Image (cartoon, rainbow, N blue to C red; front, side):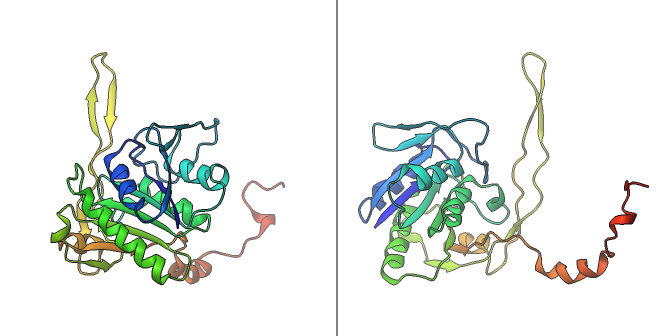
Length: 258
């Protein structure tokens, strides 16, 4: 089994290094990650300049681009054959609910998924995590079970692990995404040169966090495993929108020639 590892915290991040140590015991690994922290990069691709790939002393490849760049480059040019799986993480902080839209961790896994590879995004439940080992051991169990039993494709899993010792975990639970309250306002400040700058405010607290959600699982010492999809279509609105919109008559469109 061959596995591509990536992340959004950078190739030097402790979560990625601990994950690599554990996964290397059960699979051949290739690590391709950003050269610096690119948290919040979402699914952005770098299209306005070429990318460079360098190799660190520990054998990791690092790219001057986004998490999506890293996985896209690895799967479409750097690797000589497709891996069996893509794993992104272990992120230092949660990616639950609305976080998944902004997350570079999830985006890296999603790029693997879009290119036809089963993919996992793995995150800790809070920033400044202490127990990356808990997540790494959990991922080894999950990967081993998947390798032995399989699962119908396509597969994109968002995994969030409580930041507690591994022996204190109560198991794992299949969940849906919860929802956060709206984000805190931006923080305005002034530089020593008198320039006004803004820091993006903190994410909102959990709002939809009842039983069955990722928030609920993690708060109850369970590993949350959420299957994700890329289709953003709001299917329930299609019939109503079809009725609401009038027939389109190009001859009477605003701005048409007289």
